Image (cartoon, rainbow, N blue to C red; front, side, top):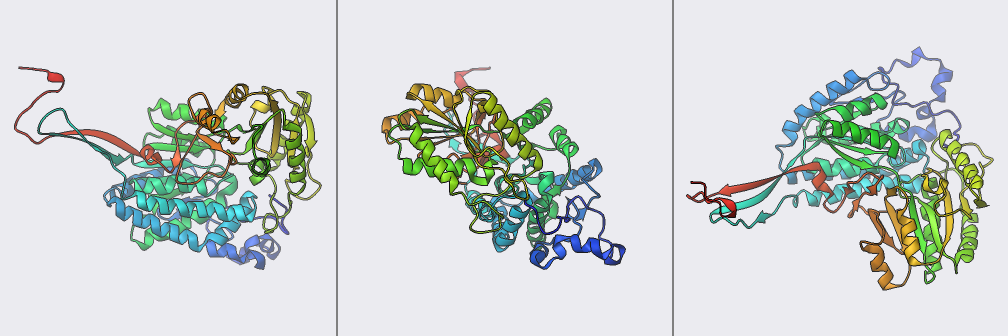
Length: 521
């Protein structure tokens, strides 16, 4: 996060009751951002000097959520499910519509908080809240459409139908980079399906989790519904482990690193539970010799540099046909030179800081490793001489396509550029990494486009043509393959992950014929 006039001292981890102002020195009170005029808008989100980090119908907790806090919250959530599941889906959709409206009313201040706490530029912070609003709109319509088909039965006087029911309690663990949108994808769809939700946000974006939960809780309470339908536990790894091992958590949606996601998947699978994993991405853009460079260059810049390279869909590899490689690299360097760096709240800025000092260290380590493996840094590669976690957007050329560092996801704005000769080899290079989230080609060749979309093309969950790897719309399913985790969230038929299906055969005749012509008499 960029350096502010005074330290950010509003923490969700401070969860004891708010003492009177006389119990603290005036000098300490003045360091709290919320008490400074330029940050008075934080109070519009219901935030205070100290904010409880556990919500289960009432706010509480002391420090990070304890296992006892978690136990109490799960018990209350399971009881609330009995009420929520009985409400017809279209009525549940109406509640989600109101949540979307409430988010829309706070979109600027909530977007500002996303920018403040996460570090992304303001327009992206506001856009992230808009994504939650959009998925609420989508979920409202979906609430009148979820269900299964009536299938033809081979037996006379019989009906064969699919019945879909909510799974129950959906646990949602989100990451720092999209602290609002990813929760929204899960929450809105899970709610209209008839589930209750338990959210564990990233520890470094806990104020956002608290603010969003306050907005949702008010909508539920205004409708005389239990607020614990959407509960919150701001905790550490012990809470995440408890969620993964808890048989009462019927579905666990986890967004984060592949390393942690694997541990989560194993714990959930050990109890034969359901998990929905959104993990790492080592995404590639491929520019063929017929590509429109007026699309390639801005797409690569946005995909590699947007959110300071901290999206799971960030482009980390750029494959360029050997005939246009040098021209593309030169154009990219000029485009990178135009990137406006600064305070994320400045509307003219395109590029802000990395989220933590640890991210800066990982950036530097990756740059050095790329050099050791034969790469040449043709742009950037250094920490910027300014307050905050700012690093230079970086372009590296000269590596082998299978260089170890190029196969390692580094959550930072580093773009590795490679030459290729033909379609067959570059499709294989796209697929040779362990992750399989997003990919894109730039070409005008219609046959090549459909080969790219086909079984021998990209093996990713997101397969684009002539657009960046990042910037997915909510109407499509979002998810990846291989080490990205599998499963999908957001649109299309992703709602099925949040429900259980029963195949039902109903005999409305007076006879009892058996299937496959079997006689049992």
